[in-house]
Image 1: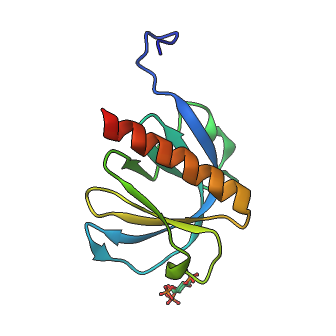
Image 2: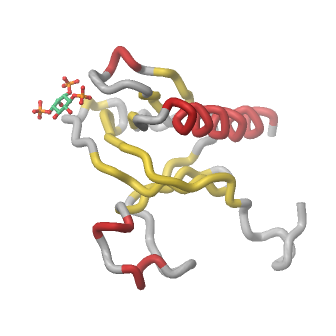
Image 3: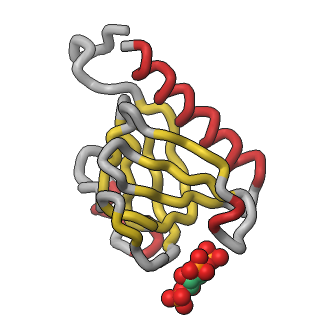
Length: 128
Ligand code: I3S
């Protein structure tokens, strides 16, 4: 739907802190390295930022921060993945380019909301 700048700004769907690790790059397996990440779902993209607590606040002014990485959700696959970690409440996001991420929260309701919201975006993109 059109917004104040004529519809060019993608909609902010969700933002919050999740534990994240990348487990594959272009189909090649990577060594896990779990980190707390500020995750932002905007339009077709899931963006990962450094945990705001580990960096200076001015970097966090809106429009003045660059994501560490960004994932295009078009064609992506989402699956619960408790078999891929000793952690609970884990899901795996796989991009069309073969990048794979695990996302996790100690709070089941929180991770479930993320799962549902991301899946909705993927489903919407499938219909385009
Ligand atoms: O699936 P894995 O390989 O058992 O994952 C664990 C390891 O990657 C471990 O790192 P090192 O093997 O470099 O020590 C991590 O510290 C763990 O967090 C990984 O397992 P979890 O179950 O936390 O995803």
